[in-house]
Image 1 (tube, one colour):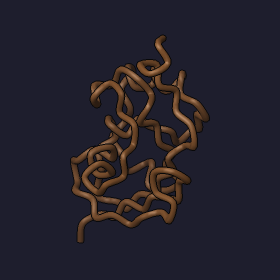
Image 2 (tube, one colour; image 1 turned 135 degrees about the vertical axis):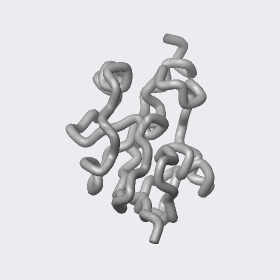
Image 3 (tube, rainbow, N blue to C red; image 1 turned 90 degrees about the vertical axis):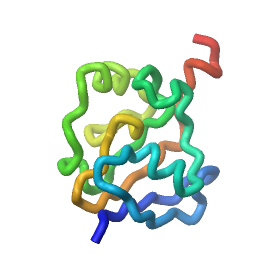
Image 4 (cartoon, rainbow, N blue to C red; image 1 turned 120 degrees about the vertical axis):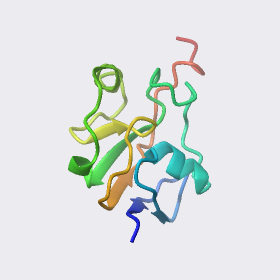
Length: 113
């Protein structure tokens, strides 16, 4: 059975939450987008911004380790938590995941930084 990606309710992107079938090796960001959850990804998933920041409420340890570049960017993310990841860099493993999309993201592209 493929892993499930449980998305906690988000007021704009996913008001009722969602349970998605995920594929091992596909990023959390791509899984969300493929299922109609329009998470921001201002840098086109190149690990150059923090708009696709998510917080893993379960399954964090099943993901591959964050790269130094991802860790450096996460330091700038709004609402950073110990289980935060950039969803464009976090590849689904074999475990189910519970993901929270933060209410805010810092979009350096839109905000002109």
